[in-house]
Length: 251
Length: 285
Image (tube, rainbow over all chains, first blue to last red; front, side, top):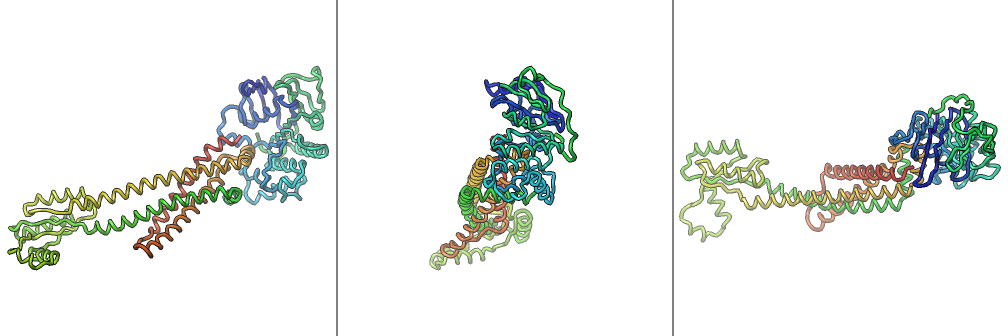
């Protein structure tokens, strides 16, 4: 579903990723763990085609890195659900409108399908009673739940989460992680990047350990280890993937 | 989906009212300026057409032309140049007397010196200086013809005035078209930059350029439509005031007014599309 092959990314003189190779299967859960500047966000930006590898290749479904036409790039992004640390909600729209925007962008649903889809997504994240609220009226945890509703409303095959609990306190972090676990168990592949070990531990995820742009190891699910000898280095066999859920977008 | 674009355009308009009103005012001013010129051109064209219709060629006949030769000539002129009417020597003298109006001066002339003539109302395609010169030259070759007059200098001046008006209208039209495109281009660019976050988010969610651009294009077209209608209203008020206080003026025919609005909207669409194709590449991640 997603594969990196000998991917190096430089921003001028700075090396963001150094010869990184890994793969992710359908419905798998992967966490990229590393300190700030270790290359986690670059990983996501390469997947969403916001940037291109300096060398190596990135495959996302049938889309390969390189110069994609803008319309194809948009199509690729529509197969993904993306969650950001800073939520990226539109402040002049209600929660309902923010989520509905993703449905409109998908362009696959008739007008009469928009409301039930949005309401279903809001129920999944427990925000149905806040549908008319503007982002400024929500707590940080609620904002992230609204962002998650927007990411899952089109039932994408892969959810990318860029430090989704980075701006949240403990209780909200637990709620968001529970929610992400549930979404993953329903069949969506989940790729989450984080600096926090406890976040990686809370998910049934294979963990990619990143350090200064290098992939220093991969831990199997349920064993987030940090000592180098415990880590399996290089490209690994992927963990058993859960069966893909019905109606998911193929990436 | 179209309703969605309209709602988005209306939302953008409300959020950037200042920018939108500035654009509408600038466009209305530019369109009114061009409209004044169009109004003058329309009225001048109308006046020139009325004068031009009176243009005729006078073919003076030789004194020895027989009635049958004259009739043959009339037939040929009718076929080739327009409608020829015969003016006898006596009719010509009467007209001359009416024009001069001074009996003493007329008495000093012993005999009627004026020749008989044919007045030819030319076909519309011959109502310009070049065609009239060619026609006059050709007619002068007929053996029955003494001389041909068509007011060469006057006709030439009339044609020059008409050409000048046309050139002026074209020049003002081009300047105003560029002004419309400049105003819309920059308004849309500023609007997109002001909504940069929205564009970025939509792009990250997988929106196509067309999806992101459509509400902005709708907004530009709406602003242009509003400006064109406002300019027409101002022009109508001006025309009414001029007609009442200075001299009689005609307003545009409905087809001109519709074309005025349609061209403005088309230019706005073009400028907005151009602006968006550039700015979305710069703004979108």
